[in-house]
Amino acid sequence: MAGSARYTAILDANVLYPQLMRDTLLSLAVERLYHARWTTTIHAEWMRHLAQDRPEIAAKLPQLAERMNASVPDSLVTNYERLITSIDLPDPDDRHVVAAAIAGHADAIVTFNTKDFPADVLQPYGIEVQHPDEFVMNQLQLQKIPALSAIKKMRDRWTNPARPAQELFEAFERRGLPMTADLLREAVTLI
View 1 (cartoon, rainbow, N blue to C red):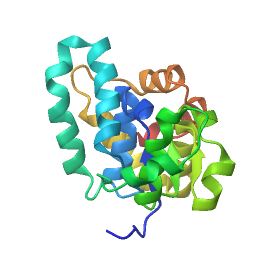
View 2: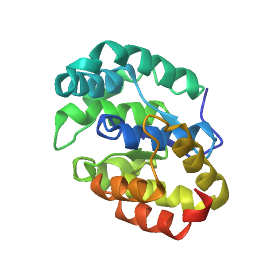
View 3: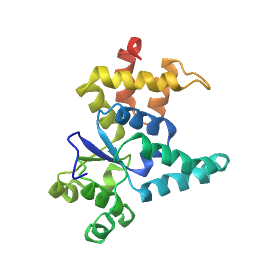
View 4: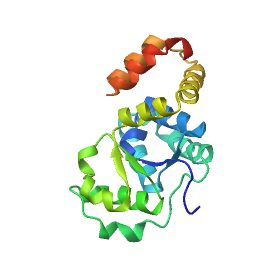
């Protein structure tokens, strides 16, 4: 695909590692509120860290990555590697994310490490960096009913154990998404 008509975001490994964040971002993408993209390198990074922290689920992670790829058409960015060496970042290990954003025609990089992606590096490519709280809030504010519906569907899938809305708000706060938690509190009857 040459590009997407929908807003496109590269999801950094650190937002795919936590289950709540991964589920939220994918739920919004599956409902076509934005186009989520990543690479096999990004998959390998979040899966490696999660396998180290939770070895009991390590064997299931490759299947999870496959399901993610299948759930969002054209999510996997390829042919970005040649761009890596031309990118200058504070942490050279993050260059592959910017390269993927360029090759994947992304509008944004969603990451908890916003400081690692300086605006002056991204601006020439028309890419912005967004903290996941800002990104999810944007989705909720721009397309409120479809976004709330996606969050409701996500919560409805959680059956082992089911989570009351209050627990969801608290989980978002613990994960560093206080604005999202506050907005969802206001819309509690819809989720």
